[in-house]
Length: 287
Image 1 (cartoon, rainbow, N blue to C red):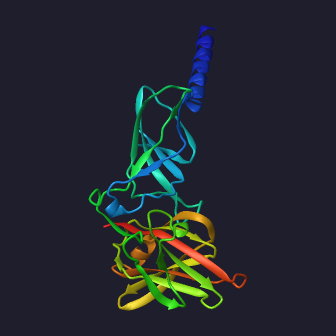
Image 2 (image 1 turned 180 degrees about the horizontal axis):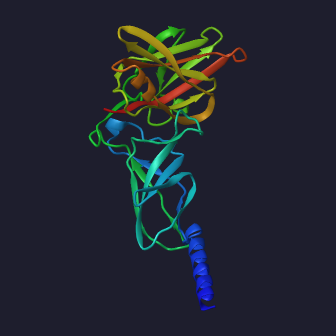
Image 3 (image 1 turned 90 degrees about the horizontal axis):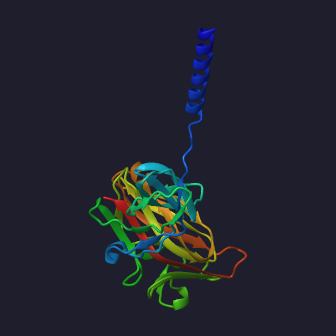
């Protein structure tokens, strides 16, 4: 009888242990509230504008990934005592909400806090562009304050500088192209060639505003032959917007090639005039 009782007690104990292993006791999180972020200048002459479209944050706790969160975000952290968050700015790769990515050219924000289960702690991450030596990064920037890196390729017209305050995103100058029934297409190409190392992160950044859609293309000089390929079509935008266009695949496919960027558009049949504005054109890559 005692043997049976001991056996039943042992089985019940094992059952309780197994239950706890399958459904461990959950801790109570501390919540980190991130409503907004800031991108601060590092060396403006090198990296250009600090306009951004950081849509998400990738959050690590003590260097372990917790997940990606769309802003504004409330991040639950199971922590005891003092802990540290590492926050990385996230973007829409190629302007698509379904392709969210960590932007590799921003620094990492770190935040140390004392765990307060059930409490909400406010935090606003601060990012910078990485400097050119940590790790080595190359910036090609065109803010149109000094010159204009775009010239006419084909079509009827090209981008020209403007200092009309109504047409400028920031500072004093931007670039515009206007179409009408007589001048109904544009195609502009960068005067600068870019030699981008293969298998390295590379993005084109652009602020733009346009009442017609237009195309971003790439001209590739590869083994003595020019190849032109569409990169992405941009929809019309009534307000200034920022886009990050991923060029890594082109640099990897066409290794040691030289690249130029092309912007191309035409007047739709249902319109008689149009205006397309661009500012803060930038090519950024790991050297």
